[in-house]
Image 1 (cartoon, helix red, strand yellow):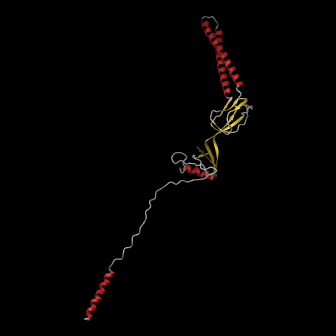
Image 2 (tube, rainbow, N blue to C red; image 1 turned 60 degrees about the horizontal axis):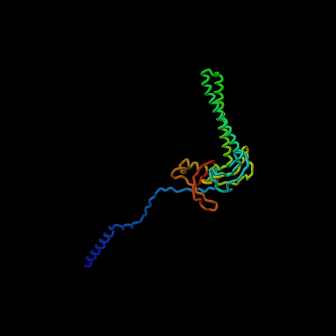
Image 3 (tube, helix red, strand yellow; image 1 turned 180 degrees about the vertical axis):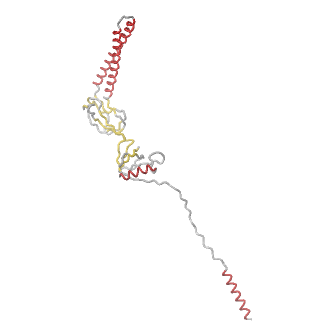
Length: 267
């Protein structure tokens, strides 16, 4: 009786052991991962350089005729327009010269009219042997000389007009006027090219950037390789920061001038 019970119990233990040995191991827990999509992007590369501003255009205003300065018609340090009169030189002697040239022209034109009439008459007379061929040739030559005198007189009138116009000394460009180097009553000479004042155009304005020769060479290589563009889409921009730290509102563009400097016009 006791022996049968023992066998059944042992069989149950054996079955239980076999059942535990055949179960699969538990599955590992799932791990969460993040997916990041990469996109190419162009990042700006900036370089800080020191520089000095320079005028876009500089005009030295000089006297082109001799004479006494009658008046100055601009404010020193003020803005002037292109063609604005800055000084007036005494025009009286140049008006007289123009009047004399006009008188000479009228005299030459009257003489030409007389020579034309004489040449026409001699042309008819020489056909009927009324005058000799030599006299006719002389009349034609006089006609030609009279025409040349008229041309010379017209040129003298034009020169006199130009000199009279030079008595109004005007600004060749628009910009900022510098100090006046002559006063009312001063005598200016065209042969000495007397400097009267200087006008500088500051809109747009140049900024000359100083850099080492190595940095300048690298910039030129970047331009040659297309990393820096001086024109077109993606053009390299230049921003100007003033000495007090404020940002100038307008942007500029690069222009190379020599090995150690770069010029950037800014509007």
